[in-house]
Amino acid sequence: MATLVEIFEYAHAQIAELSSADEKTIASASGSALIPALYARAGLASSQLRDDLPLLTGELRLLEAAVINLESYEGSEVMLCTGYELLDSFTQRRRNVHPLRLVHGILSFVYEARGAVGGTGSTVLGGDGPVPCA
Image 1 (cartoon, rainbow, N blue to C red):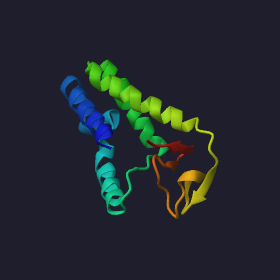
Image 2: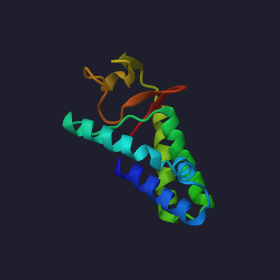
Image 3: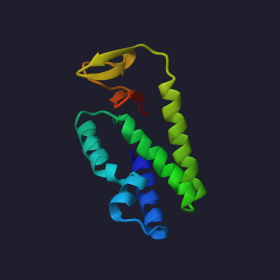
Image 4: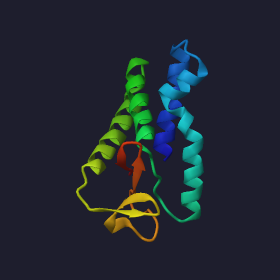
């Protein structure tokens, strides 16, 4: 989660510095609007001794937007590489051929289902289908 938050925070700072857009637009373009929800999910995961966080499809698109916008707003090479590595990781998980099952209304890989969505990298249900998370 720290990497996601770091990318969103960095993108927010870069876009805010180099753009004349309003705060709502900057929060959307940078993905920083998602940060409070990520912290809430991290707290819940931690209380359940879990090391995974669900992301919805739309939230993954925020990461894509943040990385693309970093290219336009002079983002550092390190943050761009980190962002692209995260996106590649999600793409690999999306291609995972393991069977899925529904657990408490959320799709999960069968080998990860343990009475609740979990394990190393859970699959979550987004607006247009499941999106795997690392």
